[in-house]
Length: 329
Ligand code: SAM
Image 1 (spheres, rainbow, N blue to C red):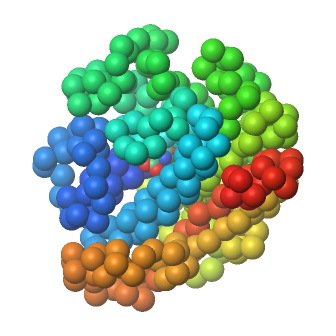
Image 2 (image 1 turned 30 degrees about the vertical axis):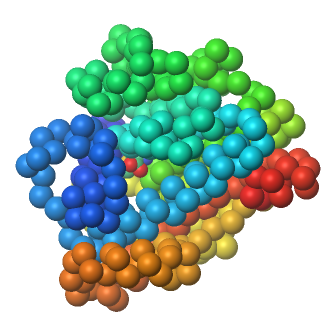
């Protein structure tokens, strides 16, 4: 079993993600008025290197696009969606959706993470008027490790434990409906747990939604992959030096293996793209042109190597062709 130290090293990866986002916002790659409230001493944090800023920009833009497409489908269908972010860390997506053009498409937003992380986030939310005003009335729950409001729930869960003992207890029918379209987000989290534990989570949701019979289930995974090659091994060593291991990357040596994480557990469709492909073919020319002027980038080759080791995989569990067409299968 993982040691305490290994767990705190995993939790620290949330600070990395939040600092990277803050940096990309400060350098004008991204817009996010909420991230400074979730980063301790935000004003004193130094920017990250251009390579990290660009990676953060590509990742965030691509995931936002997929999430917004899902919410647009909700609006088109006249039905609200639920979003569950697993290993949500200091993510601000709920606040950005709740104040943006898709707010009426959102029924519920649920965030899960280790209790240490959810306690800190619950505290930061209560301390910040900007964050809490958007939630309306807020109730602190589970001894300060959780927080609930009308459409936002923050819950402490160790995702490695059997879902029957964790998700089943936390996601009661009062919080999660089995008849509304639901999108699961795993942004840089499954790599830290065993492939068996991630499959068990996906499987639990597939069963909760009866294989998509009661409502379409979608999921987006952002993750490192292909770590078996020379550059990948350097990435692994760098993280190992910080006591972080990546058991979840083992089954995914190339881009073609990534969709199997969904199709193996009953999703009806799945696709994967590397950040390198996304930057080249999916980010608009206007945006690429805009960010090209933000900072000088010397390490273009290294940038492509890094972007080639991260991918976004998305899957849909919907039993009929009509649902698959509507929900982007
Ligand atoms: N998803 C956020 C983002 O992209 O900004 C945070 C990403 S951070 C790299 C990984 C997050 O996953 C951390 O907040 C960490 O605590 C959480 N995490 C990792 N393993 C977990 C587990 N077994 N149970 C719950 N949360 C976990």
